[in-house]
Length: 89
Image (cartoon, rainbow, N blue to C red; front, side):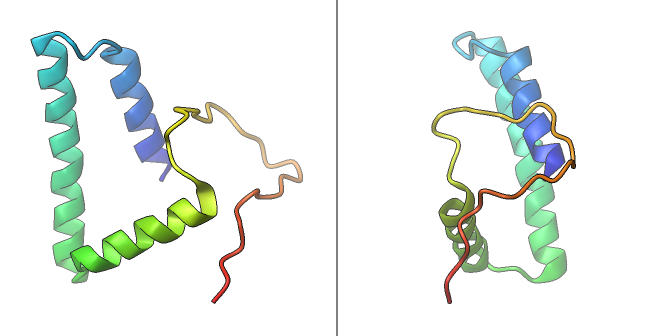
């Protein structure tokens, strides 16, 4: 998942104002590449759209979303404890 975060950061940093047609085109081009990769992984591993939606829902429940647009730039493994909510079955 680290790659996805860097992708989001690179798109935002490179094209902060997607108002121009060129910037929007670039954001769409990069995003479509990511979606193509995801679709190929789904085919290869026989993953359904429902499984992806269920995983998204679970991740949102555990980690939250991107509404606040807060991104982690750096972390260190020095006794960090996750703030993820534990999933109850």
